[in-house]
Length: 182
View (spheres, rainbow, N blue to C red):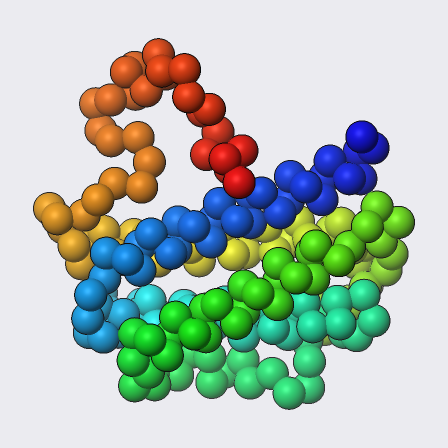
């Protein structure tokens, strides 16, 4: 396997892993109010984070190789506005963004990685643009998980190795890197 193919496969596995963390958080959140909870006025709710990540994904990954990643139709400021979307509507928005992102990644081939793309008229290699999003989306998913954990408190179902169980986990014969399960 070539390094370019390995890179693309690894990226897709990592992306699916981070999406899965968000999905598993949403499974634990039962009400619309959970999605709209704001720790304080300066913090984003999970709903706002979903709106923003999906908007970013749709803008960046629609015609990834041929159009600027900041589309004229994107309403970035509105992504941070408070809307009264239901849990179901937010999950639809979430899935639409991820579908666009994953579909675009799966269409890429090794030759595409060194192509030049643009985001806000800034010239980037496709690899750099991918890496940029590999940092951006997990950052927001971490926020989603953290807020979800605050909401659920003691009823939170851990998404990784539970406290005090690292040694036990390390001794198991299972795959240690969760992203490799995809």
